[in-house]
Image (cartoon, rainbow, N blue to C red; front, side, top):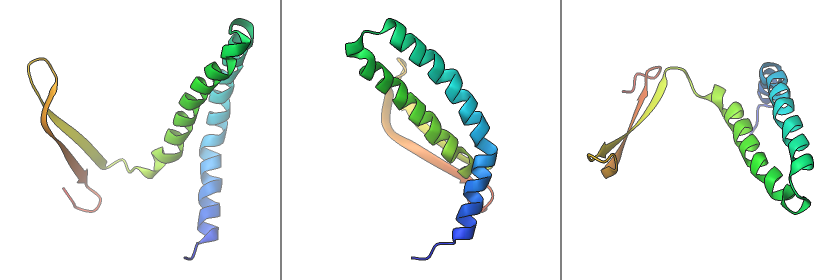
Length: 105
């Protein structure tokens, strides 16, 4: 397996340039209030659980930030479910993928 280290380094530098300040800013806006409230109002026994729950949400956000640029603007994925009158899905789920840049519909 060969790696193009220069290309990967360029990708890392570009992502840091594009996202680092935004992530740092949003991280400060999240974690400063969360930690303040946690250490002020949450009993010691429940602090790890509270911070772990917030961490799961934060890691999800970071993952979305990491992968959002990999999706092209012209790529669309639609999920269709047939639904009954109450809104519950019935039958199989249909997934339709349209990728305009490659000419696949």
